[in-house]
Each structure stands twice: as structure tokens, then as C-alpha cells.
Image (tube, rainbow, N blue to C red; front, side, top):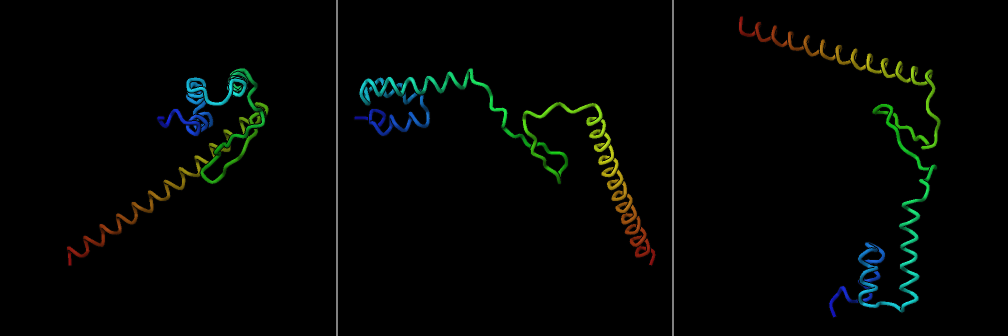
Amino acid sequence: MKFYEKTWFTVLTLLLFFPLGLFLMWRYQKFNKAARIIISIFFGFLIVSNLFGESDTNQSRTTVISEDEVVDVEADTEDPTAEEVAEAEQAEREEQEKADAEAAKKAKEEEAARKAAERKTKRRTIS
């Protein structure tokens, strides 16, 4: 008897990959006929309920606002108002301006350090 004909493999495939498990259960007549019918109806019900059932409205999703801040938002929240959108855009602009200012400051510091290194190198070559 091959491994795929054994009951343990049929049960395993029913749990992990049910289409194959259903096929093996019926092909090799594992379990009695009533059990096979009940198992088949159960999996059929699961398929139909997943296809036509309502999605879960209580699922949470995670929204990343910035690198430091993560907020959980309920999926059934209302759409933001125009005022909320404007506030969010303003906050985003302010955050971008702050990041740009920090980048410009860092670039100036790097440029100053580079110039100081050049002057130091010139002094050494002159001496």
C-alpha cells in the first residue's frame, strides 16, 4: 500500500490541502460513506461561506503615519472630512519641511567639514 493510500495521509491532506484530501478520501474509500458525505458537505459549506459571506468588518489595519508612529485603524471608520484631510496634509508638509531643513543643515555641516579638511591639507602642503 502506497503512502497516499493510507488513512493518516488522507487525514493530513484534508487538514492541510482539502481538495486533495477529499479526492483521496473518495478514491480510496477511507471512512464509511456517511462520514465521507458529512466531511464533503462541511468543506463545501466552508467554500460557499467564504465565497459569498460578508467580510469581517472588525478587522484592523495598520497605518504608518511616520517612521516613528504607527496607528491601528478600524476598517469600518468613516471617511475623513475635508478639514481632517487638510490638517493631515498640513502636518505632512510641516514634517517634510522639517526633514528638508535637517537635510540642508547636515549638508552645510558636511560642506564646512570638507572645506576645513581642504584648508588643513593645503597648510600641510605649503609647510
